[in-house]
Image 1 (spheres, rainbow, N blue to C red):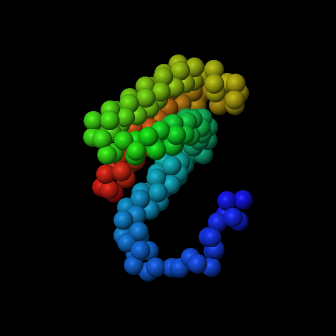
Image 2 (image 1 turned 60 degrees about the vertical axis):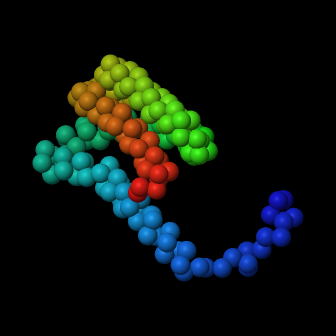
Image 3 (image 1 turned 90 degrees about the vertical axis):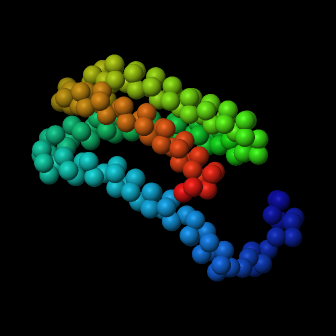
Length: 166
C-alpha cells in the first residue's frame, strides 16, 4: 500500500558504480568472514571422518547438531537489541552502557544454556537419538561450550561494524 501510493518507481533505481565499489571495499572482510565461518562449521567433521573414521564422525555430528541448534537464540537477541545500540552511538556513555549490557546478556545467557545442556547431555542424547548414540553425550558436554564464544563473537562483529573497523 505504501509503495503503491508513493512516488517510488523501480525504474528510477540506477546502478552507481562508485557506490557499489565503495560498498564492496567496505564489506569484503565481512564476506570473507562469512565464507570462513561456513567452512569452520563443516571442516571439523571432514577432519574427524578422515582421522578417526565414520563412527566417530557420526557421534560428533550428532552432538554438534544439538550443540549448534540453539545458536539462533543469541542471534535473535542481538538482532532485536542492535538498533538500540546503533541509536546510542551518538551518546558515548549510553552506547558503552548498552554495549556492555549486550555483552553481559549474551554471555550469561550462553553460560546458562551451556551449563544446562552440559549437565543433561546424556539425557538429551538418549531422548533424541537413543542408546546407540550415548557416546555423543560426552562430545555434547564439551562442544556446547563453543556457544559462549560464538555469542561473544556475534557481539564483537556487530561492534566492529558500528565502529566501521571491519
